[in-house]
Image (cartoon, rainbow, N blue to C red; front, top):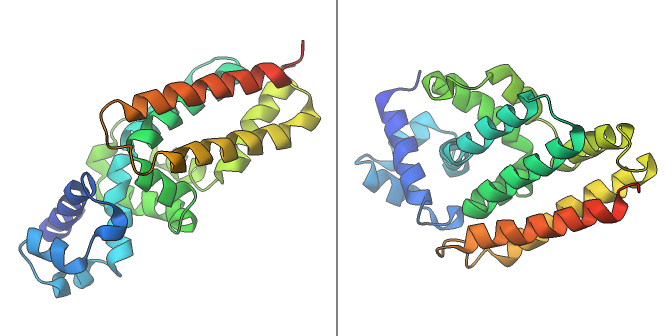
Length: 213
């Protein structure tokens, strides 16, 4: 369980991230907002990146819970692929910089460990979530995870198995390109919803193009 000051630092950083880019946050500004010194931050966290990573997990909570709900349902693999992308797009365009850092940026290699650490610190915030499932699932690379899902869809007769690697990578690369295109505008009202809708139109078009007739 986190100490009250450690929890307060995470809360303050999370609140600052709602209006500021992770790249713009400074140790001294967080310390001032939390009414402590920079030394206190270093007492609880390895460095600024460590604090930002832990605080950023809160932006992922709704996505992780929604993702587990999707994978727990008994639905066909193509529907799983579509609904998982829809959930990812909805949350990623809304919290663009955090998702970019965790799935493509400098925090990518620490993703699983960070979620595990957060879960250990705040288990009460994960009452709907299987912590072990989360750690295992989020240690997977996004492209590899997409290949796994599309392979299941191919085995069910939706795609040629030889098309899976290219299609899986194409979906991920196309999404990341769209994500970066909205980096300067994603906080504007309506932009995340519009971007999600455009991406889903493109995803469905790709699925239809490669789908076995």
